[in-house]
Every structure is written in structure tokens, then in C-alpha cells.
Image (cartoon, rainbow, N blue to C red; front, side, top):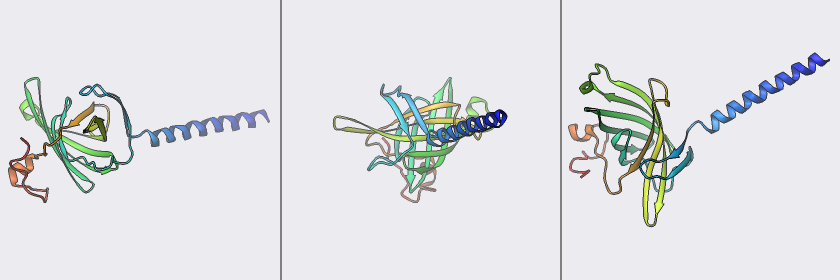
Amino acid sequence: MRRTQWNSLVALVVLATASSACRSQNTNAFEWTGQDTMTGRQVNLRQGPMPDGEMFTGFYRSQLMGDINMQQTGDAVVADYEYDRAQCHVLGHFEGTVSGNLLRFSWREDKRQCGFQSPVTGRGFMLYDVSQQGEVRRGHVYGHIGLGDADRGDGELAAVKVPGREPTLRSQQASGGEGSGEGSGEGSGS
């Protein structure tokens, strides 16, 4: 009888632990907590609805990814970014899908100028947030990136949307709007 009680107790503990792990993976899968180094603001953000009147489209500044030009059409997002690090100019591109304030994406960086022979690729996610200081309302994105199939583990991302500046994708500049279906984007972004 004691052995049966012991086995039942062990089974109950295993079930409770597994249930707790599943619950925490499901509810905490997409979150960002920390201090935004660009604004100094403390952020605790989770996946949820998109703030009213907002979308990912815009021109952003990020310490990790440099200047980001992001265009959202429906639930699809395409973006170009570029940055300089250690005498190396990097061109990057990502594409993803939006669900509420969450953007999940695949990224690719051309680092040939840095001595790499092949592009570097990975996945990531961003959560959209808004801050309000007086009458100034600013969009922000926070997230993580990973290498290969991982969407975390290679860096934290924080970027602020620059008000009044429209995004200009390299593909729009080179081909007059390829893939966007709306205008060429030429002449904007200054």
C-alpha cells in the first residue's frame, strides 16, 4: 500500500511539474523585460493586442541592428537594416508575420565586406509597444534574435520608431517598388 501511495505521489509531482512547464512556456513564450538602453525606460512586455492605431511600418533606430526600414502590409512585414561594426558594413533583411503586437521573422545578413563567404541567417521576434511623454507618442520594438533555427540567444533588440520618417526599403530603391505593390518609396526618408 505504501508503494502505491508513493507511486501515486511521484506521478502527481511529475504531472504537476510538466503542467507547470507547459503553462509557463505557453504564456511566456514571447516577452521582453529589461531597461531600454536608448530611452532608459523599464519595459515588461508580453505578446498581446497591437496598440490602437499602430503598426510596424516605420523607420527605426537600434543599437543592435542600426537603421531599420520596416514595411507592414496586412500581416506581412519586410524590412531592411544596416549597421557598421569594427570597420565592417553589414546589410540585413528580414521578413515575417504579425499577430497582434508580435512580429516573428527570419533574418539574413550579407557580411561579405567583413570576410564572410556566405550570408548569416537566423530567426527572431519583436514586440511592439508605445510610450507617451506629454503629447509625444513613440513606437518601440523589443525582442530577441537567434542564429539558424533559434529565435533567441544571439542578442536582444530594442529600437525606437522615428516620428515622421517613412521607411525606404533597398528593394524599392533598386527596382521601383518590387514586392511592395505600393509606390517606389523613392525620395522619402530624409
